[in-house]
Length: 139
Image (tube, rainbow, N blue to C red; front, side):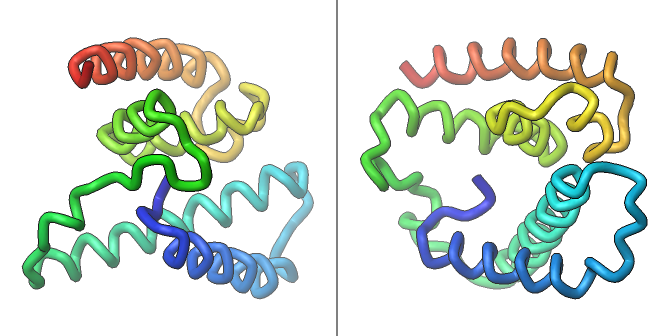
């Protein structure tokens, strides 16, 4: 979700694995390992997006930069429309959506994002409404 093409995804994956390796000695065991891994991965992805967005302010973007790849990895048009809608959400809402799609529990999502479980439920309901609106506008 945080990358627009396969090469960037592979680079981000390598960055995340490297950061997990570097950060493991500081893992305190206060949460599940998978929760800690999500948090490291999410922070790494958001940091990368922020750096890229700063760099993009100073470079001219061509029309190809705004295109979401259709049918990449066999993705159907409906799925591509959903991903385009998800990219329009705030970074926190994108992260929460990603965790939801990964079938994380409300507790895990709350731990990763540093919010309460009840707030996770409220935010997910709002996000679902936003996504319905965004996808319907696209049709």
